[in-house]
Image 1 (spheres, rainbow, N blue to C red):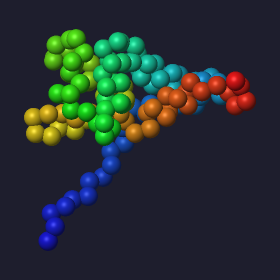
Image 2 (image 1 turned 120 degrees about the horizontal axis):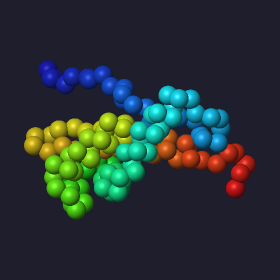
Image 3 (image 1 turned 30 degrees about the horizontal axis):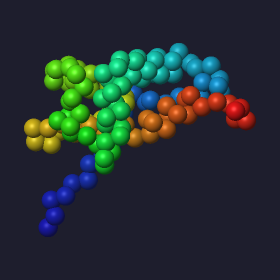
Image 4 (image 1 turned 45 degrees about the vertical axis):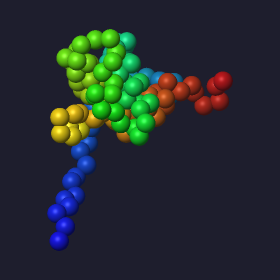
Amino acid sequence: MSNVKVLPLLEPTVEPCCPPLSERPLTAEEAERTALMFKALGDPVRLRLFSAVASHEGGEACVCDISDVGVSQPTVSHHLKKLKEAGLLTSERRGTWVYYRVEPGVLTAMGQLLSPPAGAV
């Protein structure tokens, strides 16, 4: 007999997507959501942490592998929390370590948001 449980997928609390900027003006809600995402990435330490997670082998990174960004461990934790709050990262605790991965679809959504209009060069 198996003890395997199927857990429901949780929807992210912040959706990191909206239409391309060249498609139509953003609504107030879309602008708030998008500004939160870019504000989180506007800090050099956060951008380095996000890049470290996004480029890490296997698509996820242990906090122990990405902490060398020139700030203390509590500051790293603070910045990772801000990236999670912006809907850019998800995390999972495994024993004493926390593993981070980029929220599914966020890189595609960011690329689409900044894509030029169809037919533009």
